[in-house]
Length: 482
Image (tube, rainbow, N blue to C red; front, side, top):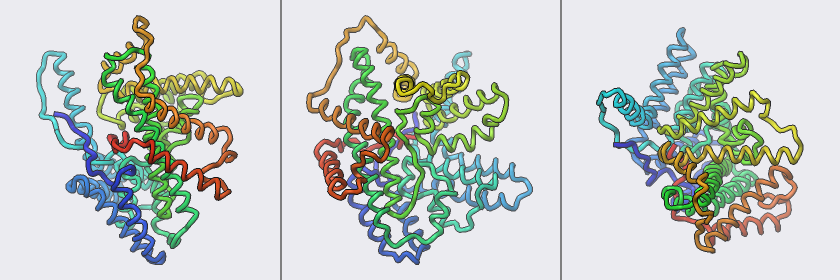
């Protein structure tokens, strides 16, 4: 029996008909409430957030509410207690309990069972066949971050339960983040927001549009190849497996960054600034630099609440290396209850330790040297993604073995010419935009060009490409599983 993830009916997935129909209604009703009634607006958003969550499995909204209530109460009590460490530990463990049970029970149970079997003991607890609550890793970490900030006196405990509940359950980011800090969002919830900010709404809609392009034109188109080859790698050549691994590297970026951009854009249309989550990660010059650009809200969380409390870099060199290792071990475990994620996290940690030992976190070698370092970093990250993608360590190792098997023919499985053309077009456009944003920021602006004719033509072109070339059958985001 295995724990499963079911996103059927999940809270308003951005590339679904649900979003196209419901969000304009939410937008209009939200702005129909006068700006001076900020509390009423918050209550409306809280109701919407919970109603959307209830679409999935109504009973699991109690878990969201429970984590919210526990961390709210613990934070309030932290300001009064004489034993803050004990209260923090109790509150954090209680808040993490649903995550540990739903996401990690089967993994721990199976690992113990297999370990005992190696020494001749056969004992097995019954497994769980429950779907993992949507967004549980994200809203749990967001709530824990708030609790830790109150403990470290970086944040005052919030008195208004409704404001805090909206911070935890805000519908744009509950499915797959970003993991926002209370110090960023709660002040925005408490101050009066403008009746309607045209510039912010327009910027938000541009983010949603480009995020949708990344998801349905790039990620889901690339997935057609990846999901054909990698699950059946024994039937394909090493070259096909290599291409599939590279395309998965592109897929997971376009999928997750596309979701994050749509979440941030949705929040922006409602007057909120959410945490940046991606900054062109495949132009990183090292694995260390990669984590300054990839899933920024998680890497910031890990730095603030794991790495620094362990001692960070203000300790001996060996202890600092250990702190890095533990931090990325936690990152791997956070991503999923499987040894593949543990190994993936460890690989990233070890690479960063080696870079720090060699002083190679940044680039000091000019344009050519930077290009070489970008390519090397991409290949390392791509190699690690194989473990992330495959269902077991054995499968990951066999895919790698397949790629390096020189006895196999050098033939390449390709889909239809139309699919190939559309895939190259989508990936090429994404690469070109990231390239220009990385090396010529603000110089070649299209969707946000100051000239209206360029801006509108660009938006219209992207919309047409989404409608004509997008893949709309795959409505699940990869990180909805985490």
